[in-house]
Length: 339
Image 1 (cartoon, helix red, strand yellow):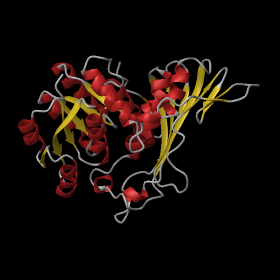
Image 2 (cartoon, one colour):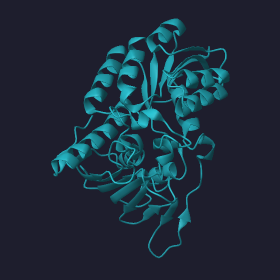
Image 3 (cartoon, one colour):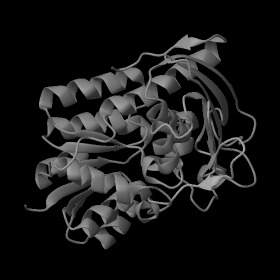
Image 4 (cartoon, one colour):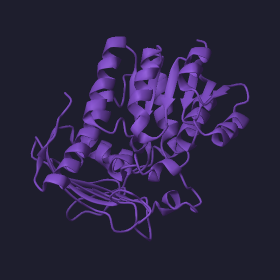
């Protein structure tokens, strides 16, 4: 089988981590690098000197004729960049969030279905210990029937927001299209919860505030409550302006016979059991790209089904959109579920 030709749309950290995994696997070849920022594009081309580089996405698609586009640019551009890739005959691996609105997600799925091409949502925490193992244990019945599930995205993002921050990313604080941290970060635990429960979310309530990061032109704290169709309740706390320990607590589940928390299984009157780590090799740059990109290559090769479909990604977006609507309306809102 000839190498799978990859075009990286957005040559920042996520895109380059995907490129690294695809080439290290041996099945991927980087033929194109797109980025609107010349300096970032030049840095990426230093890593992949045989690839073509451009600040013109469609021109690069025409010139390189890739098999796959990794959509890894700013969140609000994911929909158009994915649709453009599909219209050019390319499969797409779409970084989270899949889209920033239900309407955009629906358009993406319509084009996917019309073209018959593969679209996978890159929810990397599905491949990271202990979150992967805890979700699989929940689905396997290790806690009995679940009744409550929760996950937090607690991440001090000031280094990305502040103009002088060490990881400053200008698009995140763009006045017209700032990153929504519920969609950009909270979607990690939301995806894990939806994967674990495997039941539609019927209704969402949410509160939000913007008190922590004056430089960030959007809310920086959310509390979201979900009611699943099977009766399970869920909660997600998102904060990007906090201080102290961060990047933890993505998933917990509570069932009639046990609890899963921080990588351990708890049952009444028994000693906690630490879950076996089966995912360490998947972690690249703090995310599970070494798992997700390999799974995507397996999908293209016909070795596996799509592990995180476009509708999985769209449902994550639908929960977030219902939450944002609830924060504005002050009441619970229904979720537009993708079946």
